[in-house]
Length: 189
Image 1 (cartoon, one colour):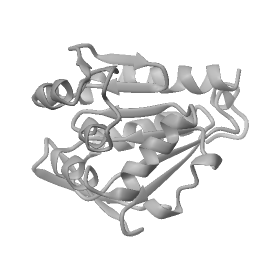
Image 2 (cartoon, one colour):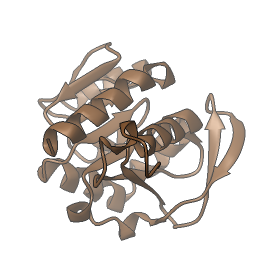
Image 3 (tube, rainbow, N blue to C red):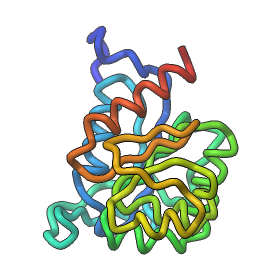
Image 4 (cartoon, rainbow, N blue to C red):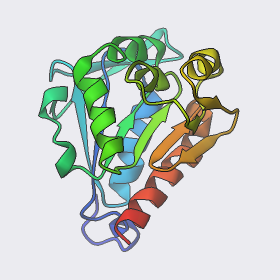
């Protein structure tokens, strides 16, 4: 965050929570964190345990560890303006069965908060019972899971269905972050 930049104040006063576990896809957490922060948002990262988490690239190559601001249980949905869920196959498969993570996405959507989920992250939405009747995208290998859960899966770089924002992969990050930024601006315009 810059205190003097005019371009860095567009999301001033907005708070974004990112939830992830070990083996999240690095770009899918770091890019939204850094770009939304550069626009003036406060971006906080939470892990299951409240301890730092291991990033990967391409699901298998460990890159670096990321410091976090707390555990999933520390997230107060009433105090945030948006929730972001990065992908990474292992991360997504881990958090999809985490009851606290399921409650966070459910509460965020029920409260009308932009909820942005990318790549394999929509597994959490499937497990939380949140895709029926919704239009969304994901990494292509989740298409059957989304359809079997009653969702309308489409192959587009970003899909906005009400407060739900979804994208397919790291190549979609510019559109994904842009949609998050637009949703935050519209909610507080």
